Amino acid sequence: MSTGVVSLDLLKDKIQAREIDTVILACTDLYGRLVGKRFDADFFLSSGAKDGTHACDYLFTADMEMEPIAGYTFANWEKGYGDVHLQPDFATLRILSWLDKTAFVMCDVYQVEQHVLVDIAPRSILLKQIEHLATLGYQAKGASELEYYLFDTSYQQAHETDYQKLPPKGWYLEDYHLLHGTRNESFHGAARKHLRDSGIPVENSKGEWGLGQHELNIKYTDLLEMSDRHGLYKQCLKELAEQQHCAVTFMAKYHHDHAGSSCHIHISLWQDDSNAFADAKVGDAQYNDLFRWFLGGWIRYAPDLMVFYAPTVNSYKRYQAGSWAPTKLAWSRDNRTAGFRIVGTGQSLRIECRIPGADCNPYLIYAAALSSGIAGIQHKIEPPDIFQGDIYQAEHLPEVPPTLTDAIQKFKTSDWVKQTFGEAVVSHYTHFYETEQAAYNQTVTDWERRRYFERI
Image (cartoon, rainbow, N blue to C red; front, side, top):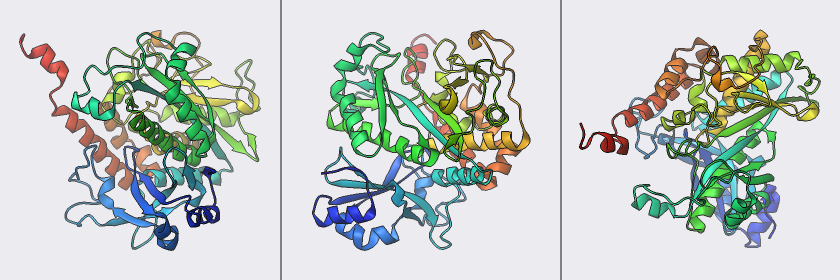
């Protein structure tokens, strides 16, 4: 049976031939997790394809434990937690090869009565920035470069042992080692094939700089499609792990003794099927105005939108000198100590931002990058001087915000963020991140027990 991206007409044929019996309608919550419903295929054709479906609006106010959190104006107990409308975007319709007879479609989130996009939904936030960029005559393309850890234990077993002493699929550092890849090819080979066969073109996979850590790269595309692919990529790997009785984690820093997992993002602007950055002179670092202004805005407003790049308390454990994660807001040519690394030449010239971790919400990181870059273009913001050398050792450069608390403060007090995203979005996400911080502040950790139980 053929898989990958399909038209609605082809899906109808496959449903009528009983090659497909389930259609998943999904969107992402604020964390970036896929949520939604599984439809009987026949009912999808008679109803879901045209009308979409409804879901409880609490999905955009719940915490990691799916607890409805008080204090949101968008949805709360006083309003009765009503519905939002999930409307399929059929450009995302695909058949998934790793699930039996199953199709998938990403949905946009609408208000039920007014039928306008829900402004706080992650996909809506990115769509607004894509539309803004289009008014300037450009399209953005990019790719997510995700890292993760693979463990020789199931998710259920990990839970039952309280996530302690997890056995990694590796016992020494094997960055780029082919033997490391071979040992785990039963998982990564399946991942590459299933993603490819499900309409998500894959470039490669490799061992990374951590015990059992890997990276799998998918081909660049426009940023909305990349965000959709990013979310489904993570879902695919988790579901494959479930099938193979192992586990993967996309935590930014799963253990203090091991390397963090990043989500480097690569972006370039395009016009008339040509990279608008491409006429920059790379050899002597003379970059064109569009490139410089986009980069200048991206760097300037990175601290204001740090909560989008690093959304959890754990995210900030990753930013350590000598760890391959950036600690300073600087840019450089092909320098992995930089927060912004310039790579490629000609049509492949692009900006790599190394700040986001693997725990990010893809729609929000790309919305953050575009909004910052657009501001740079509109206000002709020049980037700081290009840096040469070890940026970890540079004392005069501004640092990335060191904690979620610091990042929240910058986000909620930034006039530019409020003007760009609107008061409703800023208020909603401020409460979301403050809830995450508060949950951590009230938790007693293993570190505290080890340090204080006997000796305090």
